[in-house]
Image (cartoon, rainbow, N blue to C red):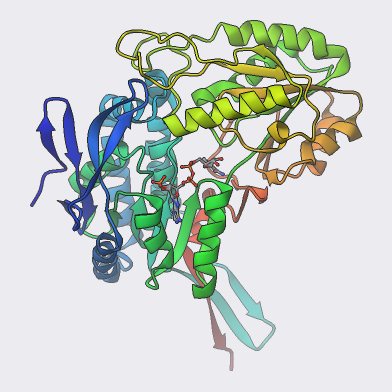
Length: 493
Ligand code: NDP
């Protein structure tokens, strides 16, 4: 029996996988450096697991399924509630780990990521106590009812930007309805998944119900999507990876949910409450260093308000403090990795080549302190003067970089909003209710926020259109995704 991680030296630990209720090293004995983005230095070792570890996790999940799938909902519910309580109890520990792993400000991890993770468990723990099954009476012939049964082993793959928030958004509904799971966090951000495993262990989650296999996409993600015994795949990540996942799942006819990238429009009409629109837009542009799939990276402003909006937006955005994620008062932490930082820089250079003007930011800031002298920092960056159809306005950057473009007419901005392969989310700021309804109807995105951003009710369907994904998460949609509806038809004599 291993502990959750081994101490390597005073600055580093070696993380273990969580399989069959035990903390175990990867079978191949290989590890990858886990780098703290704020310092650019490795601070732990993450298992570089492979298909053998996935196989072991599938065995454990298969064994656990027989009992867990028959465990009464009330019992499953109370274990999930206990997990939520323990996450809340350990809020500081989780938040610090998330901040160190991702580079996001500690205050954000503490105020958003970790509370949302415990809410995910609490939400689905109680949701399963209030489900209803449909019944259909077929004239005088038969009585039908629908059994919704757990599907078996679910493969759950999540990205690095909101590690525990998104992983728990999958784990909670999957196991709440009686599935068992093999989960893979991003290799860049393994730490809170490890802490979650500890909490699940302490909460009394039976061995094998949740298995966490750490490692890379090719070595762990791919064997999960290809495994014949994993019939359900819930994936959140980039569109290119999503396509690979879809290709792996299609021949095996797996049930798949894909939550992918976005290039979300944020539309401000001249009649909007500009104070609210500016505050909301600064947040939707730069929250988590712009590394939220829902960030509004293309801002469109109706021409009469354009000059005032741009001036006041830049003033407010320039007040965001780029700093050490662990320090109080930091608004913008580090970018998650050197690769991601290089991608952000590439797109800012491309914006210049495409004729854009850098109205704010655009180059790496001075390091916030000595500890962070090698960290991956980039300031809030605003680009104006770009055509709507250029690459910077079409491709997902996933960093603190936005464009602002003026428009004159409603139909024109609807065309701009929809002029992308993506369709994840959008925001519209206006005081004209009829216009808000018209816009909501015509924008091609899975979510349309009106006069707000990132207001999330866990009961609503969440997901994307076009290349932003297939399927929906959240509330009833998630409960349905992770169960198989079976029609039972009883003849009436
Ligand atoms: P990636 O697509 O690179 O990775 C997502 C996950 O998939 C990671 O755990 C990754 O592993 C794994 N993976 C990589 N290759 C494979 C493969 N061949 N088979 C199975 N799994 C694989 O996304 P990022 O981690 O870079 O996250 C950023 C992206 O996620 C952005 O595009 C963003 O828009 C999107 N996203 C979408 C959300 C939504 O709800 N629609 C929410 C949040 C983010 P590893 O990284 O360890 O190699």
